[in-house]
Length: 160
Image (tube, rainbow, N blue to C red):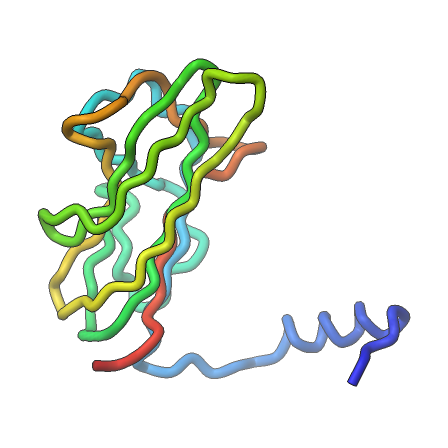
């Protein structure tokens, strides 16, 4: 079935305004960085301070840590934008273990962000957070603010 362009806005409006019940087992968060993190060094936590979504209240905007409130399989992702002439390696941690690492670089002409996605098993009480690498390639600033949305998100995709 195709939706005609004239009806598209109406359909989207109905979907967005629908009162869809959230299951009690739902867990999801999405937070953005609103400031320029200046001169980040090695092993520097990135605290995404503007919470957009926090179903289950498991993300802490003061520490940047997501704490699993239920056992499950989760999708975890972040997007980081380096400032001009900045570059860094950044890790996703599960408790004290690195589960994913990226390198992002803005020493050239193009402005680029990097977005890893990890699918992981979490038990109640496990923590997930984003931190610059303790060992590799960290120089400069992480961009956040009105026009560029460095962000951190996660959601439960299945029970275990």
